[in-house]
Length: 145
Image 1 (spheres, rainbow, N blue to C red):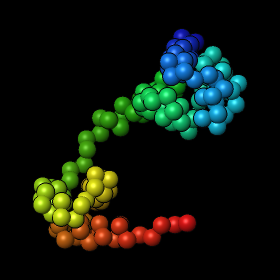
Image 2 (cartoon, rainbow, N blue to C red):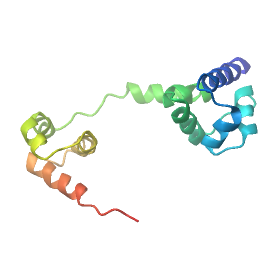
Image 3 (cartoon, one colour):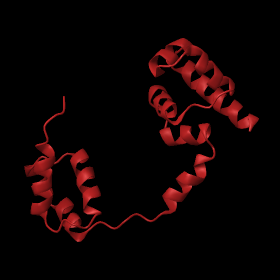
Image 4 (tube, rainbow, N blue to C red):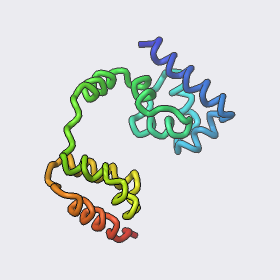
């Protein structure tokens, strides 16, 4: 276990230094004390799951890679998730996504496509008109202030 924590700490320290950040400046970006960054780099503490995400984003690292480095026990969970076969999308979704003219006419963004694809996995949408109706509803949601 000691080798893993040393490896994690050395990796984070090297990445931080390569970006020209001090422990204090990284800590400020993460919203933690500089001593907490020092403890993580020395291997005396593991970052929380929330902090793993913040560190990865701040240092430009892959979140999943850093999660496994920080919490090796999570590797089995991630591997189990990857081995699960993806659900099949409905034929209506396949037709909708291949209709490039329709997608262009309604200016459907990648983010909207992703949301609609997830919805299609439920198998309740049967036609392009229904996807467009749902898209209209999504776009019409007022901003919460």
